[in-house]
Image 1: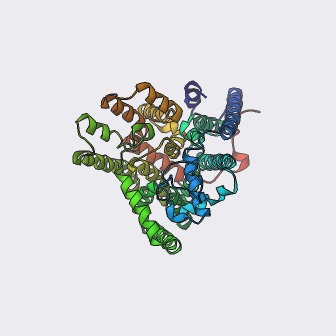
Image 2: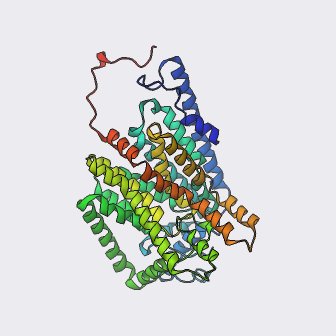
Image 3: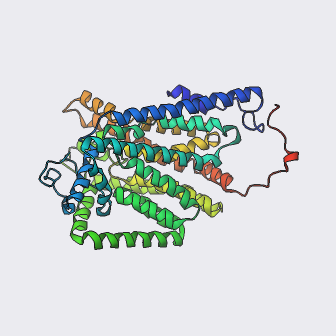
Length: 463
């Protein structure tokens, strides 16, 4: 679905305040149109997913990483999951040549893939991705319904939500690489958002711990939440994380965890090229190259950490305002979880295109409060979404080939700035429009007045 169609769904100029959703004959026609758009979009999502599963793309990419890890676990070679990825597995060649970055305790999660041959396993893995993605989107949609302004209720928001999901390329990138764990993490975060808002801290801690085991780079999300969600959650999260770590070391041994820590700590300072990295700190490496530095520099490191401090301030700003305004705890927990997810992406040294799927939590929320956002904020939000939505791996690699080898660092810097722009703008939106975001939370979580008796209600439109 193109930007024109999405723009039409965002257009609210025809709504009349106080008349409720879809008043009158024209309103019923609008409801019918939005229902058809939502259903058509959902069908398109299903068809696109079926094509993504059926096309045998990515057998040597990310899928191979998880498949080979599962093979090593099944072969009793779990001690080698952080070694040379080209090492034989039970005497046979590996499927790919990618390093494994998950926590040791996550490795057994991929052993089930070995029940199939590589081709079948990739199809099953992609099907799991589709199920996780659809479940996550469904939970997210139902969860955010309470933020909609009345004229945006019903099928209008459903049509907009489905259109945004259909256009969002980070969701589709996983099919190009043979499948990924990002859709599963997306589902875990969607459920975790609901649980955390409802003060189900054991559940949210378990879900976040599992997400971090799968993708350790998301640890800043948990760290941020522990600081902003109160002592009770901090204690529960620390207990769940501590017990998980103790079980992992007891079961798999300390030497394997030493290898894992060495890989993760070594990866923090690695500079991934812009083709594979949408992190806000990625452009720093090209600034250093423009300055003629042979490698990473002290001043480049200072800029990197300065950017992260600014990211922390931007994500904390709406939470501080919410506390000053005296918002209910549920509202502050909800806002804290959203800010934590954004901060986790802003703080990450490497953000693959599919990681931007997690940023959809913010875009879905902004779509739900669209009528509240000032005009300039809508422009920024649209730009952020558009720059994230176009990050298609095939197109990006084609652009890199078009630019050719031996290009100026200035070209790489420009490309890196464009790729990191969605996350930069996400941080700007949280900071610049914190008033709007806090007011939306205040409205959604304020006590609702008791409903009037049925006989006293005024029908929304004549029948």
